[in-house]
Amino acid sequence: MQSSSVALPPENSCGGKGAVVSFDRYLGTVLEYFTAALVFAEIVVLFSGVVSRYVFHTPLTWTDELASTLFLWLSMFGAVVALRRGAHMRMTAVVSKLSKEKQALVEVIGIVASLAFLLMFLWPSWEYARDEAMITTPALEISNMWRAIAIPLGCGLMAITALLRLAITGKARDVAIAFVTVAVLVGLFYLLGSSLRPLGKLNLFIFFIGVVGAAVFSGVPIAFSFALATFGYLALTTRTPMPVMVGRVEEGMSHLVLLAVPLFVYLGLLIEMTGMAKAMVQFLASMLGRVRGGLSYVLIGAMYLVSGISGSKTADQAAVAPVLFPEMKARGAKAGDLVALLSVTGAQTETVPPSIVLITVGSVTGVSIAALFTGGLLPGVICGLALCFVVWWRYRHEDLSNVKRFTKAEVGRLFLIALPALVLPFVIRFAVIEGIATATEVSTIGIAYSVVVGLLIYRRFDFGRAFQMLIDTASLAGAIIFIIGCATAMAWALTQSGFSQDLAAMMKSLGGANMFMAVSIVVFIILGSVLEGIPAIVLFGPLLFPIAREMGIHDVHYSMVVILAMATGLFSPPFGVGFYGCCAVSKVHPDEALPYIGAYLVALVLGLIVVAAVPWISLGFL
Image 1 (cartoon, rainbow, N blue to C red):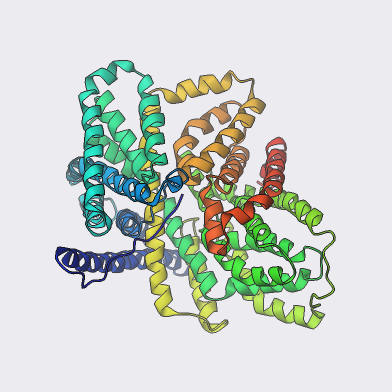
Image 2 (image 1 turned 30 degrees about the vertical axis):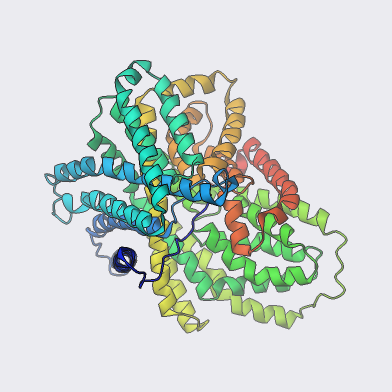
């Protein structure tokens, strides 16, 4: 998969295209400033709620409601910014094998397919917003239409953005072919509507395997692939009013706990900008620099620490790689080996709190997020130890004759420098455990702490970059939350079809809890590599967790196994987007990492099997 910005022609392009480019730039600037303001407002509102409740003991009853309303706006308008930047997650493994001309055509077809959904979805979303006008919110006492109107406005702006992309970057021939292709396919499905309904559950294969698979592998963004299949299934094979689908999308995007997604993403960017991540890594390097493979152990430990305070794996890896890689290369490490290890540690630390995936699991399955945060610490350690064994084997003959030996005084000085950064994970954890802040609010404490430390201690704080990070956060959060909304609607459609009951019967027939767990591992490794981690969790979590519960598997134990399995697929070639994101951050070609990553993946899977076989690893500290 990939996310790539679209290069725009110069603003002074001749003819009508120049005017289109100018309008696009103006619209993009307005959207970016607006979404940045929404992210900032969320931080202020939630932090104000923490301060008023814990410091002044006078809770503000309206903060959660206002934050939730702003969050839906942030998600929809962030999705618009992501579409403009080409940042929506999509599969490119197949498309990338085509010639440049065919890639350009498929790219345009993907935009037109997304546009087709947006145009079909626009009127039902307006109907949904209009119906919500009759509801008054309890705390703010305003019409709920102020909240729901974000969906049709966001869809409309995404449609305009898609049209602008076609006008600016698409060749006339490719655009014409794309419109004809999509129109023919939509028309064909519409004409076959009366023939599809009698097929019953066979339609599940047609839409949720056939349509989704064809769309995903054709490069259509994942969110729109899910949405197209769900819209087509409900419209053509059921009598479900389309505003109901809009409600399910809104429900998926409105879990207050998901507010942690953009806030932790911003926190991850902050700790890199302020130098906190660099200070932590330098201290660890001074401790283990004279151990064979020592910096590889540091990489594993640094990813564990950074993952505990960051909401983005890309941010984690971007914080660690620039600090460690130059020294590791100087000591003779191969670039491909470094990237392979960095990629797999992304999977190993997926259960380390406060992981976005943990928050997502809690939001879609009802599992306690506090329990997930506690249960996720040790599984990451077990998988890390498995990776350490591979490091030991590969570097057991490393030559350390030219490696600098740090004195105790130097180690102590680096420890004092890193101490403010090392304290942050404990501050966050303490705030949640002591009830100072919820899992949603605690990120704002981390943000406030990072700002203070960056300004007063490390003296590294770029206000211009901090503003740009607000926009980047909105774009990434919009892409993620829009996927969750579309996947929630798809999961609801699957559930309404009776799929969950059929799946339960099939899973039960496999031979009990152990076989169910083994099949779940295989399924989520595949889903993680193909569908991305969060969509896989959102789509199948609500279906499989009740089955696991019925078989006597603890929710937290099953969560850890599923998350690690999903992450294994997510960071594995040839499809895992995490692997390619890691290569991009490290500026190393994927081909260089392929010879090295196999052993690390085997170790990771062995660690996963241990976690699955020993429930105490996930449950011992609950």
